[in-house]
Length: 218
Image (spheres, rainbow, N blue to C red):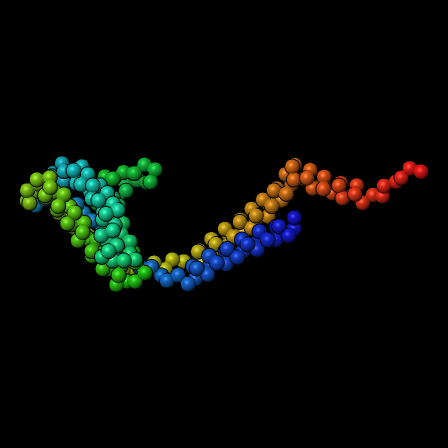
């Protein structure tokens, strides 16, 4: 039992060491993000136009999120910028359990291991989003002056995502301690199952019986 427990602990520690080494040698990632506004068309300049057309703008934004995150669009982005990733999501005013998309804003994010690739990917994604929206409205027969434009607001530029090494390795240490405890306790429970205990007892009794001398009658 002690050998089994020690083997499980050593295996857990080796896995944790491998994870720590991978974290240590992994290059930092860069991210560039900005808000995407699905704005009113130029002809809709009345004071209350935003409140009238906000549901339509939000619906258009949701359609573009689905289009940008579709496999075909992701393949186009990967072909233009291999190794990078792009995400587009509507701004959620509440939480994940009860989302509330009450404004026609989305967040466009591009990530890559290199700063230059991150900016290039973001620019490609922004242009592709504009083309998707224009083609979608053209197919729907929307006149050019009535089409919804896309505006990129607050571009962050490539920002390194270093994170906190203390939190990362501290969390890894806590998870390792939990895993070691579970392995130690699990090995004890596995060995103390009634069937296994009876089997060991039977083997032990058999060895004792076999070792006893057999008396012969005169």
